[in-house]
Length: 216
Image (cartoon, rainbow, N blue to C red; front, side, top):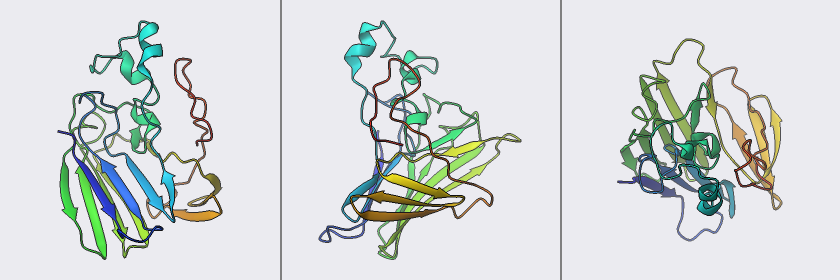
C-alpha cells in the first residue's frame, strides 16, 4: 500500500551511497503529499533530508481539519504535509492529487546502474498527462534523479525540490553542498536553461507550521 524503493552502493563502506524513493498515495494513513520524494546519503552524511512529521496536537488545538484526506483539507495547508515541503515536484505551485496513487514500476539491483522508477501520473493527473520519477546509483559513485513529464500546460513552471541542512553555493546549473567538511556536487543535466535557486525553509509561510532550523 505504501511502496518504497531502497538502493545502496555497499553494505560495508561507511561512505556508501544510499537513496530511498517514496511512492504511494497522500491519502494513506498519516500520509503526506510526498509521492516521488527521496532521501540521499553519501560520505557518511545525509544530503537530501525529510523534515519529518508535523506534531498533531497544536494543529488540532487550532480546530483545523487534520484528519480529512480530501483535496481541500486543512491537512494540505501544512508545509510538512504538502509536496511543497518534500523532495519532489511542484507544478505551477499546485498540490499533488490527494486521492492519487503512485506505483513503483521498475526496479533493478544491477551494480553499475541500480535504479527504481515511480509512475506519478495519477498524482499529477490534472497538471500533466504523464509523470515519472526515476532514481539511480551510477557505478556506485553518483546518484541520478530523472523526471519525465509530458502533456504539461503551455508555460507550466516545474519546481524540482531538495531540502538539505548543508551549506549551498549555487552557480547557474551547478551547485556545491558542504557539510561537516564533506562536499557534494550537484549538476542539472536537463533541461537546458534550468537553474538552482535557494529558499530558506527554516520558517515556513504559515503561522501554524513548525520551524525547520538550519534547512534550505
